[in-house]
Amino acid sequence: MEQKVVLITGGSSGIGKSIGIFLKSKGFKVYGTTRSKIKYPDFDAFDLLELDVKKEETITAAILELIKREGRIDVLVNNAGIGITGPIEETPNAEIVKAFDTNFHGPIRMIKAVLPQMRIQKSGLVINITSIAGFMGLPYRGIYSATKGALELVTEAMRMEIKDFGVQMTNLAPGDFATNIASGRYHAPVIKDSPYEKPYRTTLDAINNDVDSGGNPMQVAHKVFAIINKANPKVHYKVGDFMQKFSLLLKNILPDKVYEKLLINHYKL
Image (cartoon, rainbow, N blue to C red; front, side, top):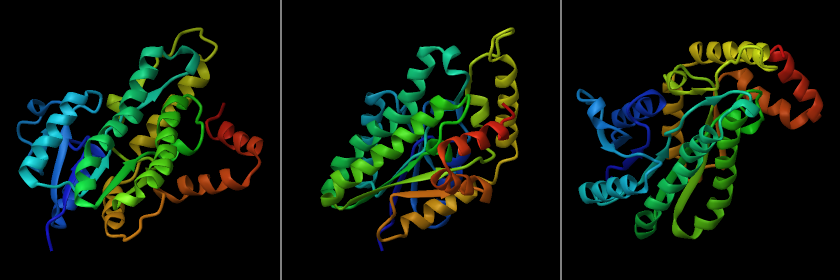
């Protein structure tokens, strides 16, 4: 059986690195991407390509290089993303645009870049890493929720558009996992005497505690491996602890205001 070629954006750390290490151990040919290879001179977990999902020229160059080396792309894992928190009223518009450019437009750019090759192959799989946060509007994480929710909906649409090409697409929504996302997240500053000062600070502390106590990102890697091995992947997958997944069930069955009250209580707002 021919070795499958997997491309993982944001593969130099966190969930992306865990996915790459696990898939390589299972016999896949793995390529990860990073915006700057010079920052990882000793990285040897798998091959890294320099690519910034916000810059089309770097995407084109990386995909051409990968096809030159391997002749094919079997799986794209759209994992690269950034966090953003803050009261929406106090979050700079430039930061909102940046978040959408990375978390939403970035995956779309990647999909557009690999589809021609996958269409030639008459096969391929795209796994979009979204978030459980993308299924609900979370206080002080509304922009992040919106970027991930938008990608979930685009995947629903694109699955139908590309079905005749032999190419499959799905979403995988993780809950909270112990990664370095908090260090790279944009935090709108807690402004003294702002009407949001106290509730935002409380929520920010809760968010950081959830990330710090999150699960092992290898759980996400195992789920990606399982999806790759499915003949007909579903539209949506979730991976996380019981309560995180249960919260989605509650959202589907509870009245909106009841669910909203649960979130208000959870974040002590």
